[in-house]
Image 1 (cartoon, rainbow, N blue to C red):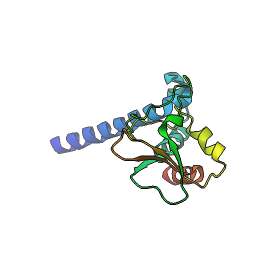
Image 2: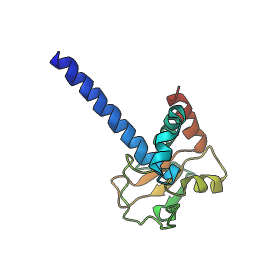
Image 3: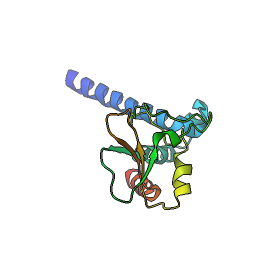
Image 4: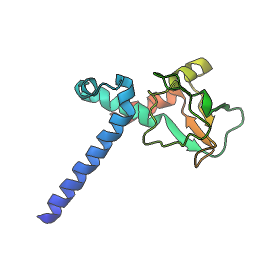
Length: 144
């Protein structure tokens, strides 16, 4: 009986962490409005969260012909403040919606091409923003 309760508690804790991760990633989409986030339809919330989770990965190499930016071109969508060279990437909290990542993808005009951002202040040399089409494909598969 104790084992069942322990397993149930662990599952609830894991679910809570997953929800917390989504909240961190998605609150910028809702302009920081916790109530709007809480009232958003669950299936749409899950899809948006999967999209945000699929947006990034880190790398130490860049393929030939890749588009590479300095991390300093990334700006907060509310303050306009740019990230600095010493920005340390944390994929658990970096929100696709808090910064101008979508605008950079659209400016690049190739929705099938990943964008690379040099991150000298991080453990890995590059933050990679997946191609928008790839992000949508991953979100769609993850949400089924």
